[in-house]
Length: 98
Image 1 (cartoon, helix red, strand yellow):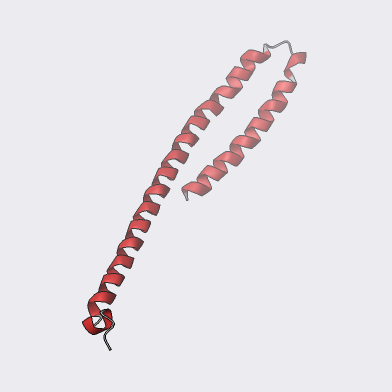
Image 2 (image 1 turned 180 degrees about the horizontal axis):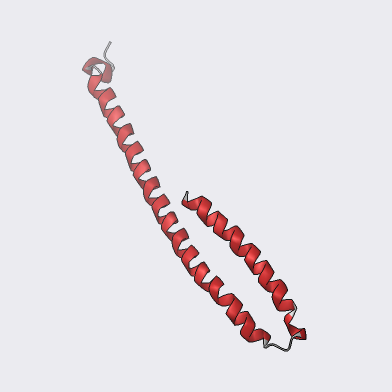
């Protein structure tokens, strides 16, 4: 769910940024200071970007943690199966006696 929300936010932000750029291109003919308007337009994106980067970092951290837990669990299960195999094997088989 969080990945879908991040993707949706990205699409919304991209569309909004395109509209802002088009609006800035029209400013020179109005006599308004384009630098100030640009700063006013960019500020919400900076805040959004900071929030999205933090969410992305949290998701990445959670992903790495789950992957490490899965790897440890898989390794533990494999070790348990190997130990069970050798404990169920007769000593004659292990020493290759015929």
